[in-house]
Figure 1 (cartoon, rainbow, N blue to C red):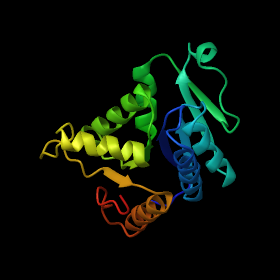
Figure 2 (cartoon, helix red, strand yellow):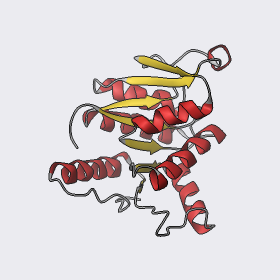
Figure 3 (tube, one colour):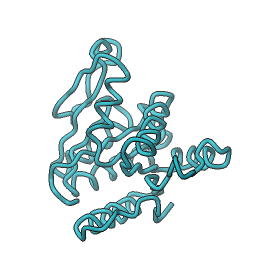
Figure 4 (tube, rainbow, N blue to C red):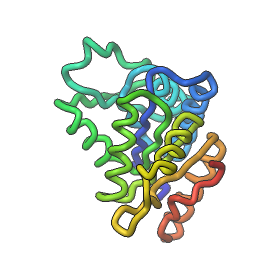
Length: 197
């Protein structure tokens, strides 16, 4: 799983919950680029920009995936965007993200990020088992809430092994390395057994 043509989808809000979460997004972008991932994200500011900045610092690229008719309303892409895809509607945008994803990383954000995260969880649990990292304090609180209130319940037909909590960039890097090592050894990657949550 260590080829250089992999895609990481990053979901994160335009208003970081804290400077430390913004720094975490940048570090996650660095880790992804260091592992050969191309970054797909919304293309705008906040955590998306931080992740793209981190990827760029390690020679990675970031493609903005947005809606064709929202450019004037949503503004310019962040300066680290190297490519773009403009889709006609939300469904096409989500499909573009998820069909391309080798991994998904989700951090805190607003209702748009929540929509993207829940779509990723549904996709990974029912369509294709893409690893979904829940990263940073804000997203980890959401994950705890969803589990505690039975919004996320593992069943034989709805497995949750794709979920990987990571509180820090170091924990994320370790888990990504483990996933790569399992793929290189021809083993089934053990997703869902996150370290450092």
